[in-house]
Length: 270
Image 1 (cartoon, rainbow, N blue to C red):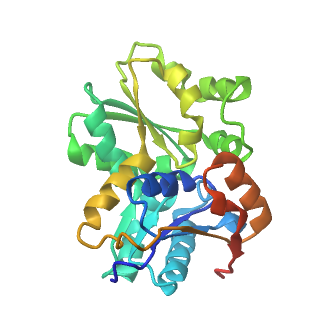
Image 2 (cartoon, one colour):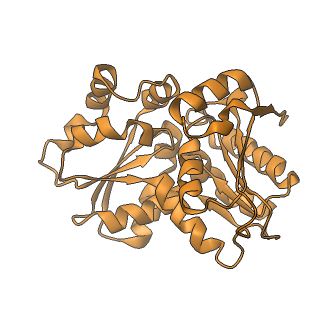
Image 3 (spheres, helix red, strand yellow):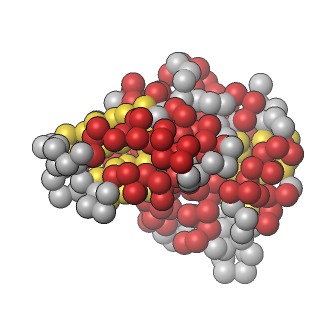
C-alpha cells in the first residue's frame, strides 16, 4: 500500500456518490476512483450469487487500477459479497456500508427500536439485523424494502409530493408512535438523497443514520497512518460500465459541487 494510491469505491449506480462525497469532506487530499456498474443495476433485486459475482468483478477492476483500500458503497453488495471480496483480496482493506451503518444506528438509538429502509436484497440478507445485534443484543430491527426510492433518486426526484407519497406507502405505519422506533437507517446509498422527505415522515424524535457519513468516519480510522500526503491534490475519477453521458448528467444534477462529474470513463467488467 502506498499512501498516494487512490481509494476505490463502487456501487451499482449513482447512489454511492453519497459515500464519495462524504469521504471527500473528511479526506480532501485522497484520490478517489469511483466505479458505477450501471450496465447491471439495480443490484437490490438480484440473487446473492449474482450480486457476489458482480461485486467481485468490480473489485478486481479497481484493484487492477492500484487502489490502497476498497469501499463497497452498495448496501446489497456489502450485505452479501463483502466476505467473498475480502477472501479474494486478503491484504486489501475492504469496508462495507452495512457494518458502518449498524454501528451508527446503535449509537443513535436509545430504545433499540430501529427501522432500516433498504433494498429487497439487503432486507432478505438480514445483514443489518445481524450487525446491529452484534453491537446491541436487545435491539429490535425492522427492515423494510423500499425499491422505488432508488428509481426516484436516479431520476432526481428527491423531495416533493411524489417522494412523500411513496415514503408514506412504505414507512408510515412504522412511525405512528405506537412502537417506540427512534432511529431510521438509510440502508441504501441512494436514500440520503431523500433524507429531507424521510425525516419529515419519521418525525423530529427519530434520528436518521446516514451510512455514507458513517462509512467515511470508519475509513479515516482504517487508513490512519496511510493517509495521502498533503500535496497529493485529491481528485475524483468516475467510471461507468454503460451510458457514461447519462451517468454524468445524473451525477452532476445530484452532486453539483463535483465538477469532475462531466468526465466519465467507460469500462467493461465482463
